[in-house]
Image (cartoon, rainbow, N blue to C red; front, side, top):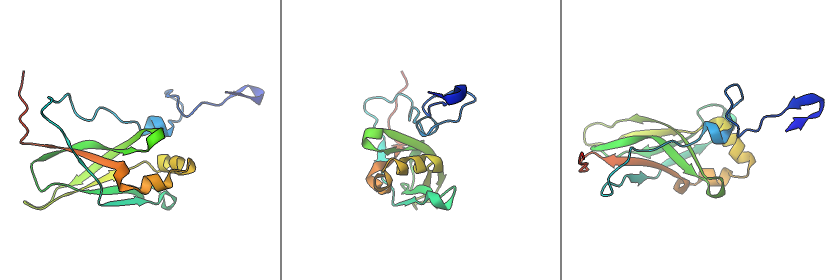
Amino acid sequence: MLLGGGLFLLSEELDLPDAPRGPRVASACTQSWPQLPNNITPQSLKPTKVVIQPWRGRHHVYAEFALPPSGYLVNHQFRVNLDNLGDFCGGISARPGQPGQPGVAIAHFRTRTALWLIAQGKLNALNQPENWQLEVLPLNSQISNP
């Protein structure tokens, strides 16, 4: 978009090396798992707690997931699905539990993306645990090598 005086305004959706990255680019989802055989299906977990307080600063938009006691691989990212806006992703930090006890995964959501989504009227959708998901893959899955 060209503004008066010859100044160009870059769209938030462009991914130019020197341009600021908008929410859709910075919180884009990548390939979750490598190509899995048809008989292997990741299990989707819902969070036990969702915190949406971006006005408090960084690290105040997250969800907590209870992990199975053992025998699972945890995906490196989680997804937040917001219907007509699509999926937004972020990183996971996991704390394994004691043997036989469940661990906890914290899903960190970008504060800037959360603020952008709130400005789009999506605060209620962000607060809904059913919109958040973390995939885990059972270690005992029979993955055969071709």
